[in-house]
Amino acid sequence: MTFPDRDDTGERVVVTGMGVVSPIASELTDYVAGLRAGRTGAAPITGFDTRGFEHPVGCEVNGFRPDRWIRRLPVERLGRAARFAVAASRMAVLDARPPEETLRGDGVISVGTTNGGGPQLERLVETEALPGGETRDPLPTGTVLPHNLATSVSQELDLPSAVPSVPGTACAAGNHAIGEGVDAVRSGAAEFALCGGADAMSRKLFSGFSRLGLLAPDACRPFDRDRAGILLSEGAGMLLLERRSAALARGAPIHAEVLGYGLNCDALHPVAPDRASVASCMRTALRDAGIAPRDVDLVSAHGTGTGRNDVTEVGAVLDVYGESPPPTVSVKSMLGHAMGAASALAAIACVSAITHGFVPPTVNHRELDPECPIDCVPNRAAEADLRIVQSNGLAFGGSNAVVIFGKHDGRAR
Image 1 (cartoon, one colour):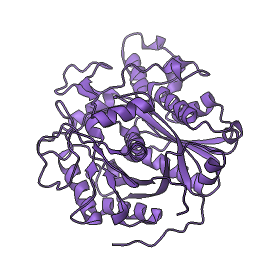
Image 2 (image 1 turned 90 degrees about the vertical axis):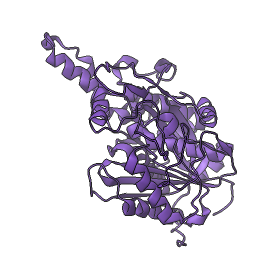
Image 3 (image 1 turned 45 degrees about the vertical axis):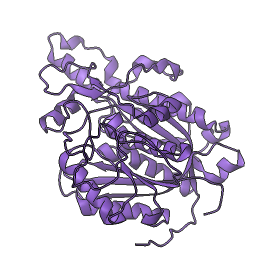
């Protein structure tokens, strides 16, 4: 299968900065080390009362100190997800070190999410329901709106001309945000884009997935014969995107190039993915990148660890790549499912894998499901010279987003 080259009249887009808050690490260097080591964030949940739940295990962010990264805004006036987003954004800017005039210019801040200020909303509702609710704490009221994820980044980093955006496309939202940033920079509408995703653990989401019977009892095991579901997670991943020409001109560190992306939504079922639609989204991303399936060295799957979802996604990979697809891994085996932040954290894992020359493992693996005939790189990272990596994000409602990253070698494409 071959695809025609994309129309390359737009600006090439590169990743110059990345920031991470995750259950396995809250700085980029430690995050990469954790991925290499197959570190997992699974542990009993402490953020809310889990009495009555059959499987009270998740992947929480621990040891995170927001005051290290949040300097202009009062930390107590930010919700948990907004703290993650702001901190990861500052990390990305510090990593890229763009000149002041770049950040004063036109930009985009796009932070995908599932739950936004959900934990704060729960707190408000609980206060209203309890005796004395009329004396509720007014502080959380201003933190529940999802747009705070982007506007707080703008305020904290003093980005007066950056347009804020908060895609709410659930588990594909991080990749949607990256796609939005790519379009803005590629078209010349923006000099930079800060894009990714953020979500915080909440009792509401945990209860919903528990009622659906999708929560694993102890560990997330994507593609495994004995997989039993997801582990709910939280965190943020933010990438700073710039024009390649501008990054080269200032001698910026370039982690990787964003070659292309694809989006679609089949809207066929509230929760079940559609194999043909997922495959179509992958083909759209490959076509936008101007590459053929044979050019891809690694697929970072959505890989939730649920029964039919893994089988459906692997089937779509086989439809696109044939019977011998590239290694196909799931970092959710380590990170859990961070909802709107999930594909952003996976995107940073993909870029890091290209930069540092390794394939992140699919941990907790015991026996491959015969319906998932792939190399999931079980339990141990593998050294590899990766040039092109595909990152999948699939969401409830049939919303799919796929991003293609490539190694930057300074040559014209």
